Image (cartoon, rainbow, N blue to C red):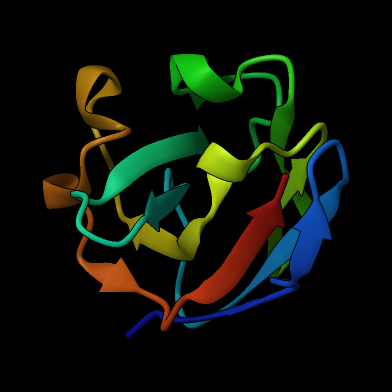
Length: 126
């Protein structure tokens, strides 16, 4: 069983930065895929960034965050999402998700993931 706990959400002004952390426990040996999703009020859950544990140099991003967000492994049991130049449209609840393996084209699809954290709120004011 994999358990995920997010932290780091906060309220910031546009142009600010935040670092979200997902603490991972349980058996994630092998080619586990870790991802960050977000869901704004009234909108569907959106894949933000994903990577395969142990492979920081192979990451996937949705177009709206490329060049601003970075996903990586902070330690053996931590995955972070570094967010810079935050904008009001980034306001959402951010979720960490994990799956034993996700085929490339599906890494930013919520349906590919079976383990989820409880979420952390990010609010960006203009």
